[in-house]
Amino acid sequence: MSADADLTTGPLEYRSHEGRMNILGFWIFIGAEVALFSTLFATYAVMFGRTGDSPVPAELFELPMVLIMTFLLLTSSFTCGIAIHEMRRGSLKGLLTWLAITLVLGLGFLGFEIYEFVHYVHEGASLQSSAFWSGFFLLTGTHGLHVLLGISWATLLIVQLRQRGLTPVTSRKMFIVGLYWHFLDVIWIFIFTSVYLIGMVV
Image (cartoon, rainbow, N blue to C red; front, side, top):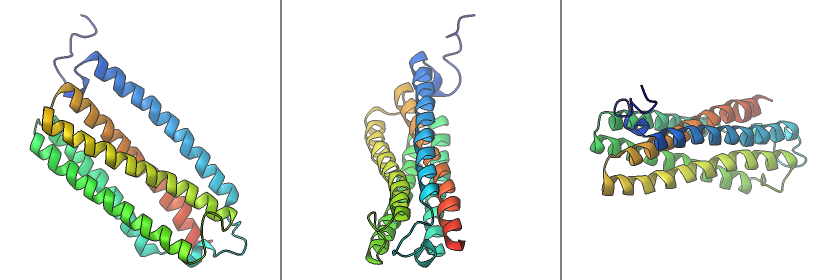
């Protein structure tokens, strides 16, 4: 039996050799992203506590706001999973609906993060304030930029899905966007625990 004999079965995004290779290539890309964020987390750890004359994190971090941001992002991961499920069912309408909800939740997260950054700067904690705040803004800001990239990417995908429908190509792209979105949620869990929770008690 040839290696491509089963390409007419299974999830649509895996039904071509190109699709399988692209998905594999994206997993390799995720590995590079893990290395990037590992470096940022290490940098933040080295700079932790070096606030100088600027406010300490316990003075500025607010648990309710961080919990809202966490709720929005983790819920968006759930809705993204439902979108993938709808894609697997062959429901374009269901996919577009849940993907749109995912993007709204992601935009809500970004809105709160921007508000948080503006508030911190107003209170005297900026990128130039101290080594600690440089590490904080570099780590969380990089994650925020990745979320913005994911939202932009998914928005363009919605346009393609509306024009072309569910095909092996659009399904592959949607699956990859889903992987990317779940990856950003995992990174946020580490930020939530190692940055915010520890920063509030130390």
